[in-house]
Amino acid sequence: MKSKPTHLTCACGTLRLELRGAPIISAECHCKSCSDAAGRLETLPVPAAIRTIHGGTRYVLYRKDRVSLLAGTENLREFRLGPNASTRRVLASCCNTPVFLEFKGGHWLSLYGNLWKQDELPPLQLRTMTQTAPDRAGVPDDVPSGALATTGFYGRLLTAWIAMGFKAPDIAIKGAIDA
View 1 (cartoon, one colour):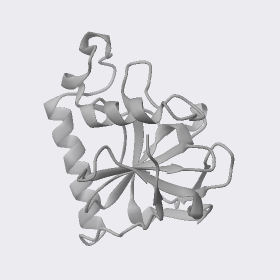
View 2 (cartoon, one colour):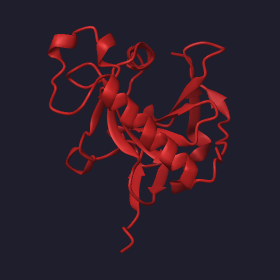
View 3 (cartoon, rainbow, N blue to C red):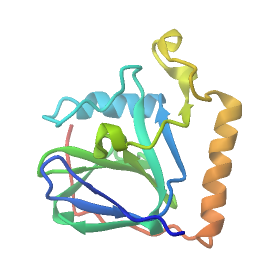
């Protein structure tokens, strides 16, 4: 049985996305890059906090070929931590809603958890990079985290890439945001 698509919007509703199929994984990242980016982006008038109460950034990862940007794409702006950063975060400039993180050459998008209504957000399955969390003792161990869990995470990414025929579609963004 085919699942029905998930429809998401930015906070003001201008940007509309459609997701098909199940996510690769639902995760919370505690790496320095995500923490630094969240701190800088939270200086903008964002509609909601980017970091969780544990200091991580919540993402739901989808294959790029299962994400459709339906409307409002002219408002998408990229943010990078530096000019040579291999990752970019993308926001909807109409309301500063964080939309996704994309790794250079990646075949997936890490969609920010704040795009979902709280009761519709896919359940957390994994925490990554918890060893770099500023308050490691404050990060619960209610879901897998650490090196072994990260191996499973990369296994899921590889499986998704194989299913996509080793393709990594480009997503063009017109402008940038300084934060």
